[in-house]
Length: 419
Image (tube, rainbow, N blue to C red; front, side):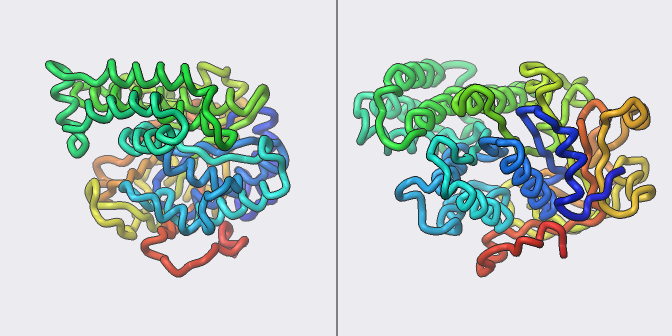
C-alpha cells in the first residue's frame, strides 16, 4: 500500500494512470472534505503535468456551466466564486456550493488566466436532473439570438407545465394519455439544425444543444420512474456517459477529461452486486466504449469520521458521525493493516489476487442515517475489477458548505492534507 500524506505521494498513482485520456475519481459520500481535496490534488497534477482539458462532475449542467464561465473568465461570469456558487439552489446544495469547490475554481481561474480561450480548462456538470433550469436557460439565450428556436423551447415548456412541481405525476400520465416526448425531440432537432448559426462566447452553441439534450433525457428519466426496475438509474448514467463523450469530442482530437462522481457511478458496476440488479454505470460504459486501457477508475473510502448529509430527501443538511466501518469490509481491513492513509494499485497479479473476492464497501448517499450501517450502506465489490486504484483515508472530516461556513473566504493551500 502506498502512503497518502501529501501531493508528492501521488507520483506512483500518476505513473499508473500513464497516458489514459479518461480518469474517473470517486467518493464514498457526497459530503466528505478529504474526498474533494484529494480529488483536487490529483486533478491539478493531471491538468498541469498531463494536459487534461476539463473536469466533469455529478452536478447539474446549468449550475456547473456557470462555474465553467467563471473559471474561463468569460464576460459577465460573476465577480467572485461565492457569487457563482450561491446560485446553486437545488437540494443537495452542499455538493458543489462549498469552500472546497470554491478553492478549486479559484485555482482553475488563475491557471486559465494566461491561456488562449480554446486552451482553458473547463468545469461541467454531467447530470440529467435540470429539466426546468435547462429550458429556462435556453429561452433566456435564444430570445436574443434566435427567436424561432426559442418558440420550440416554449412549446416543450407548455407541455411540461402541469408537472413542474411533481415529476411523479408526469411519470404516471406519460404511460397513458400524455407524453412530452415528441415535443422535446422536436426541440433537440430544431436546436441542432440551428446551433451553428448561434453567436456569442465560444461554447454558446454547445451549451444550448446540451440543454436541449437534457430535456430529452430528463423526459426519459421521469417517464422511467414508474417502472419497477432500475431503468431510471440506467437512463441517468447513459446520459452522463453521452455528455462525457460530447465533451471529449467538443474539446478536440486527443482531449483528456477528469470525472468526479460517487463510487457507485465510477466503479465498474459489473464488479458489484449492481450487476445482478440489472444496473450499469458510467465507469462500466466508459470502459466498454473507450477500452479498459483508455479509462482509469479510482475509488475512495474511509474507516470513520464525519460527513454532511440529510436525514431525508430535502431535509436540512447536518454534520453526522460516520461510525467505524463494518467488520469484514474493505475499510475495516485497511484500518487494521494500513499505517494511516494510503492507496492500493491493482496493477499486478499479486495485488489483483488479494482483492479479487467480493468485500463489503461502504457507500453513503446524500440521505444518511448512521444507525442503518448495520443493515445497509455497503456494496459487495470485487475491488480489483471495480477500480484501478483505491484511496483510503482512515479518518475523514465533513465538507464545508457555504451555508454552514458563510464567512470563510478561501481554503489554505495546505488544507487538503491537514498540515
